[in-house]
Image (tube, rainbow, N blue to C red; front, side):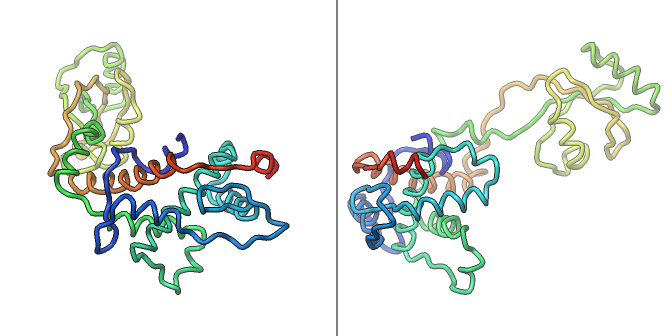
Length: 276
């Protein structure tokens, strides 16, 4: 389902425990189907039904309006079916979070308003148990996502605008100049970088072969050419373990909902959906 691309990274279907006790897939499926249905109302027709879960027209309309208000113009291209799938996902996963004991402080409820789902998910995903073996398996599949963002540059110090113009012309032709050095630059500013965030942003705005400068560094002004960087290796597992944990936990939640969604019949009033 393309809508699931919004939700989190995808991953293999794994069993998940919730709260203090471990829950089987059948337990979780039972939770997913256990939402209370809105009371029937003749002026609020049923828009969609998935098992015992019901989405009514007023609920869908309010949901879309609130998300358009939060996301702005970039959400206007989302079609009605995607909104419906997203709403079903949020109802299902919110239920899982509450069953796991995640609660919202009443004092914060009004402040959270439309952010309630995000708050529940942020707290709930951290509770999903994950073994070291599961994290390593996830890392092996997604290792390329943990390659550090780096750029290779050639750079040389300049002492005057005239010298900068002369060196720029040579660099743009792919030539080397006396005193030129080659270094890797990380996208995350650190003491190893030539300078701070402004220098890093300027470097990563370049394509290989392009030249920038003079750029100020801690050693003075430099002309910089971005070079082609050979393929990098992924950071070692231990260095990104907490990132792996967070992504793998999110993948578990999406995998469980995706499995449930694929096994439950979804009935949609298409005529009503298209009219909203």
